Length: 135
Image (cartoon, rainbow, N blue to C red; front, side, top):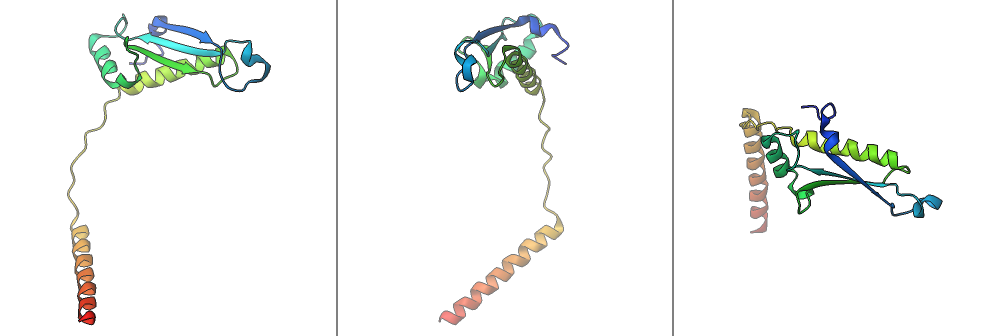
């Protein structure tokens, strides 16, 4: 599902505040930091199955109330930070629904087995030679 095309943006809430760090004259006057909040449980667009997947996979990113919170303060403008926060949001949501590929168990090749045994024998011979010299 492409979330950029859906109406999921209507369920997002934004909060602005003053950004920290260096920024010159504007840092103490303008509210450029943007905080995006998305309530997964209250979403009308997502199905129950999708909500469960998000709650499970994004558990460490959620607040105690179950809200997904994304903060952006890298840009110098509020609009730039809002766009950056939206990009982060869509990336996080789309990655949560990607299913990992199943691992196919493989066996070592015949040549790799032979190589391993050859090196074992060679190392054993080297150690054997050392022992004879010490006695």
